[in-house]
Image (cartoon, rainbow, N blue to C red):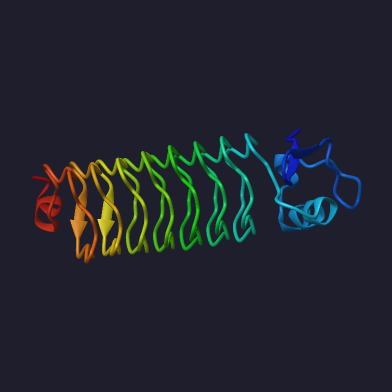
Length: 207
């Protein structure tokens, strides 16, 4: 059972166990917008689900805006269309997660694992991706304007029509990535590794 806390100056208050309005304990199977609404009403502050295990959960359209999900296991999770604006996903495991058309504007993904994540059409405006692992992630038509992606790993990722304008890509590794119609206007690319980047023709021919 996950512990839930609210952050108030100067110390966080931990509340456990946490119950929904019908007296059901929160668990991965019952995780939904209704549960989140109940928790927010009980706590009245910043919701913390730090370290929660939601591996493989169906969280389509769920509202996790501003929630602390640092160190959480969200691998193989379906977050299609979910609202994760301003959430804390520091060190979270999102490998093989589906984030199609999800909203992650202002999210903190520093040191997070998004290996093989499906991020088609994902909005990540102003997000923090410092040292995040996006190897083999599919970021087709993703909106990553103004992201802070210093030392992020994009090896073998798909960046087809991805928007990285005004992004900080210093020392970012794009080796083996597929770049087509990538928007890089006004981005910082100091020390970025673009070695062995594949063009559209190379990928078609398997070269």
